[in-house]
Length: 279
Image (tube, rainbow, N blue to C red; front, side, top):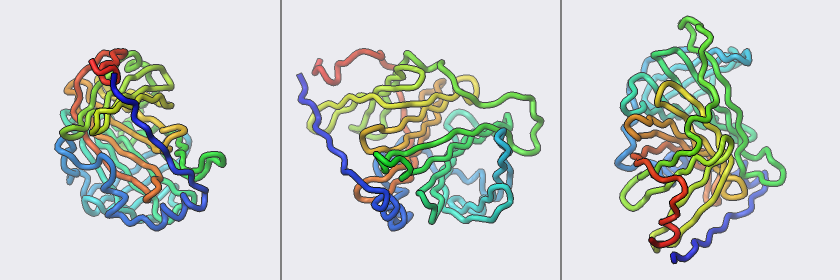
């Protein structure tokens, strides 16, 4: 029987959360946790020079321009231009689908935008995530999903949207040697994960989750670490080749994180607990 992993999370106030977001430099918040690794593709250059507008069904529009791999300007509803450090990855095996994330500098409360852009279908998803808004747990992220289209594409009425197609399945994701985490897509609004540390001790937890369908065999899986570190994880999955690209946004005791990852997966049995049972 494996020993249970003991984990604790620091309690932070709203003031702590804002201070950590304001004082964590780009070179730190973009290179934390599981960022990088052999299964994360290089940051894409295919968006450099592109200008495009996402029109959302809620009535908002976002204008974007990538002047460099990490240089992004954007404006919402023509209300003023913002310049940000951004990261963008193309989904392996699915050309023209991109995951983009950026922290909105000087935002109060701290805010990050995560985008899924499909330049084949013209469909787009925008996830707006904020820290410091939940009074009883300020470090926990709260977010909303918005769906729409890229300007210039015919509006056929199709949209990315919520799905239950992953529910009941599981994938073990390897981020680098020795770092494999099993995601069990437990229920329409929850997931469970299993992991072990370097000492072989195990950890199992369940958290709120959302599932979106982007196109056939392409999904978004996103979770919130409720009553833990509060972090948002956001993964764009190619189920055909079991490769993903992902992003994290959260406030750790040592500073903010807003970084991207990549992993290679293998299909797993949802309710096989061998990792934690030592078999």
